[in-house]
Image 1 (cartoon, rainbow, N blue to C red):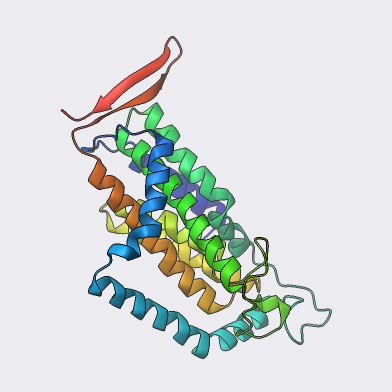
Image 2 (cartoon, rainbow, N blue to C red; image 1 turned 180 degrees about the vertical axis):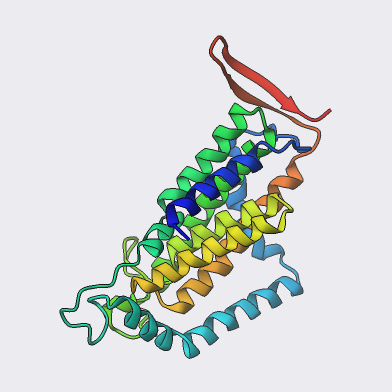
Length: 278
């Protein structure tokens, strides 16, 4: 499928979702307060976890460790055979094989992510759709939270990237706030964070399929470019999905019969409007 056509279809679908009538009420808190509250909620959540939550963390950890032991090296070898990245062992001076589709899809974990957030917000304002604005708020709040969680793990473990050819078990540990750590993948974490937020807001099956498939392709692209091991990507998928769902769940609990003050833009009128359920 032509990648440009895929991107156009995705953008059209997101705009269509944004204009669906909603039964949600917007929160009365300021946006900065929402983000701060979400960050605090995610970072302090383990303190109130029950046995089932710790069990899920245990299974997720085993999945990541199992992937590192079983799949890291063979997956990297396969990706190197496909891409012939100059950093791959035995690549020599061979030209790298460019995959335009994966190169493009990779941006959903960075550049395009910002566009998706802005798209939901803009669509919500233009179509007077409170739910779309709430999705945008949750996307931004979850994204900021995931960056903080992701970077905290990166600087703590400081794992060498596969392109450094130091093996998949080279964890240097904390060396300072700035590093180029492989674990976990920032692009993949961001992609799964956005995917889980969007999928949590809409019940349609195709939304989940498109969202999580796109996020998975971002992870594949990062491995294809020899930037991450398979276990980096698996860990990022767990992290992003958890944060996205946690933020949506927490913010949903704050939304009820409240009102919100939103900007109102038009050719002859600029001001504010109250929206909500009564």
